[in-house]
Amino acid sequence: MISPFSFVGSKVAGACRSCADVCAYIGESVCAFGGILFHPSRFRAGDFFLAFQRAAFDGLVITSGIGLLLGLILAFESAAALRMFGAEVYVSDLLAIGLFRELGPLVTAIVLAGRSGSAFAAEIGTMKVDEELDALTTMGLSPVRFLVPPRVAAAVLAMPILTVFAELAGLAGGAGVLSLMGVPFEVFVEHVTDSTGLFAVVFGLVKGALFGLAIGMVGCYAGMRAKSTADAVGVAATSAVVSGIVSIALIDGLLAVLCYICGV
Image (cartoon, rainbow, N blue to C red; front, side, top):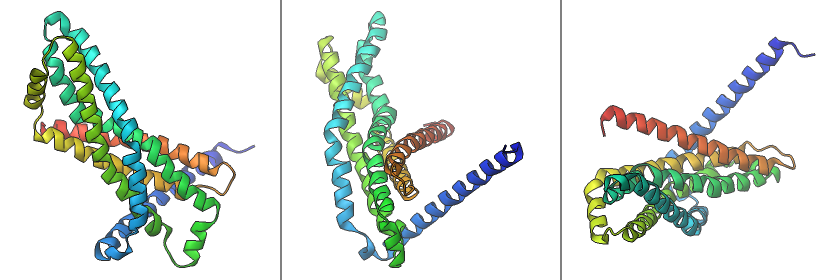
């Protein structure tokens, strides 16, 4: 029978080792990106374009579809509440602010975490199971420097593109709902432009890029830490999705607090 002190001690030691691994991974990744800034030829452009195609272009349809459905749902639900006041036209203001500042980047990030974050973890996890990462280490190549920067850069650049398409699709869905309620399209466009400024649009894109950074880093880390077992790839993909969504929620919460403190 394991004593309570041994059980607690083993858990604490495991948590400390995990924290040390995360810190080492972040530090090595920062060094890898710093090395690329001084030596751009080390950047694996082929891996970057392949990861970017899979993350951005292959995900446009599903992201735009979810954005369209999101705009339809928000417009219908908001109109039902505002109809009793005769203020259906202000649904466009609510829709624009919600999509540009919060829902557009957040929903897009969750989709990217499910698609690309799990894909990064599965790819690198398969390399770990096949001992390809050990082969890179034996040849004197850092697996982090070799594999992480192209995938993280692809996720960071893909997120703003997907966010824009999701927001435009959401606005199109909201415009369609309001047109059925008798609100002209010109009035919808006027309210959208008046309620959202340049800051809201740029803030949403920057937030999306931060979400992409977190998704790429978490996905690659899950693949790097995969075990050499039969179910290792599945466990790594699941861990990447769950940890990526948690990271997205944490970053979103921190940015919300920061905006509240700054009064924006």
